[in-house]
Length: 421
Ligand SMILES: Nc1nc2c(ncn2[C@@H]2O[C@H](COP(=O)(O)OP(=O)(O)OP(=O)(O)O)[C@@H](O)[C@H]2O)c(=O)[nH]1
Ligand SMILES: [Mg+2]
Image 1 (cartoon, helix red, strand yellow):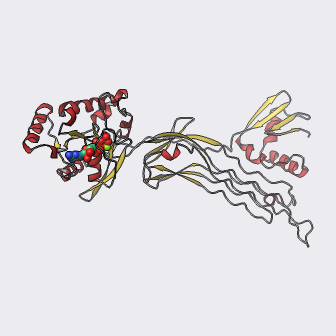
Image 2 (cartoon, protein in one colour):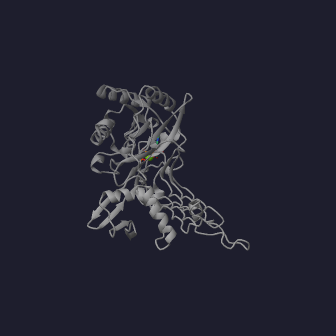
């Protein structure tokens, strides 16, 4: 089964919690704070791999969570960072944010990576909060908890040349002869069920050829395997259109040629405009004279002189490779997929909003999220630190500007307290 579009869930690792600990040895009964910081969570990284050519591996596994950072420990030990999770995808995979439908990455080159989500930061241990005025901070910070996101992976085969034609005309055989690819070949239609790629070397240059499943009349309405796979040749620069010159099974060279072109056009005007090299295949099945007659007749009717090959006898194949290269150098590369520049994994640590409902003031926003992570309300020192920081951040001032007075309630995330001057 070929899979070229799949939705998956990804989540970077949470940050580890900071540790709350005090040094205690035989000699020091009440030593200083020695709680270490939590470790950072692992990132989610996508990596393009030329060893994969479908998204099949994502059929059953759809959840990808990177490792969490570990909690800090006593004796100032920082928790271990979570391991990054590297997700391999085939070259040509486009990553789309499922929420906004924006393309966030286009992984085309082998080995290319993209960090989709960053792991949560670890929380500070209580040792971090030690200062000249606060010798024994009795609180530590929790790690950042990351959110799960949905992304769509879509595979768009990247090839310079697409092999197009009716089923059984010898497309896969040709690919196996001219490239390093090893596609399945058999004497029945629809042997090829998903695109195969091969790298062709000629005159010290290389190009990539894609062999796609055979097309038939009505493919654009879903006949045969449908025109579904044409999206894999949408980005090719040159089409090699194969026609079975032996006209076996009642086929006809003119008819085949026209019908395939019509299907290309129905799929997209752009694809119909892509330059073509027309090739007669299986010429070993014909006598020399018969072949020449067919070539002449074809040229007379269409104005195109087809090339002629026998893939199994390797006849005409070198000429075809040279011709492809000669044409390719003159055709500019198609522009890559447009990747939208927007921060998919944006961490908000600046926004701040104060809402008032009668005598209750609600403080919200990324600016306070970070700092509230460490507060233990029933610990007086922790609470004092909390109030000081609110003062330092200018939040108390803002609250007062909004009318905060003695006895009012302030709500900050899960924390709720009465304001007393
Ligand atoms: N006589 C002859 N037979 C060939 C030649 N090339 C391919 N064939 C045979 O034609 C049959 C179909 O070949 P494939 O390469 O699988 O054809 P395809 O176009 O990829 O077919 P689909 O994947 O079904 O669309 C096989 O039995 C091949 O051995 C050729 O040059 N001469
Ligand atoms: Mg095939």
